[in-house]
Image (cartoon, rainbow, N blue to C red; front, side, top):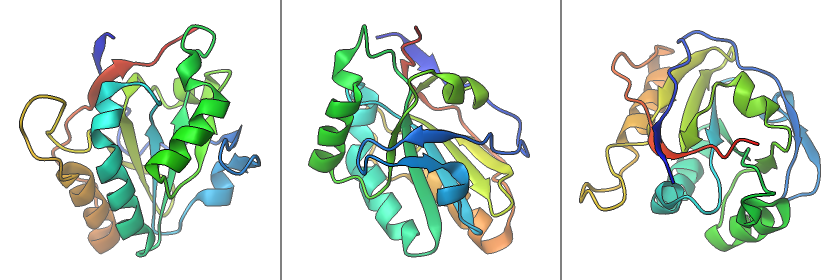
Amino acid sequence: MALTESNMLPIGTQAPDFTLPDTVSGKSISLSDIKSDKATVVMFICNHCPYVIHVNKELVRLAKEYQEKGVSFVAISSNDVENYPQDGPDKMKAHAAAVGYPFPYLYDESQDVAKAYDAACTPDFYLFDGDMNLSYRGRLDGSSPGNGQPLTGADLRAAIDGVLNSGAATEVQYPSMGCNIKWK
């Protein structure tokens, strides 16, 4: 595991489109299928990263809370499954069921979507407003495995609340950190 910080894609960037297989439903899902006219959260995660494992319960809690407010969520795994078979599509489906993900969990086999989003680590979060312009990118909150800070989702929650309440991007944004995406 190489501790990696997220790349800070410029605020206002239009969400790159994609169509990827959903390991949960077995269907292909595109960004246009799931985007919300209020806000959309795109997350790059994987099954095995300890940083993702650390935030899973809060991801589920946060998604359930904000889905009720019209916010869409989607998770994408872009890891090289030849060298990291624990992140393969069959294991993604089982993992999503075990954790209780209330959102699609898409497989980016070509890694083109991760590259389009300039994703660097897992977890990595992108919040788009109703026009699909980037309003936030970075961390869930200040908690990480072993640092003793409570897991609250405070940073992403503040960003979502800002978009829902005023449409404004959060001024202070911190990069996420976690395992690097496992590139081919």
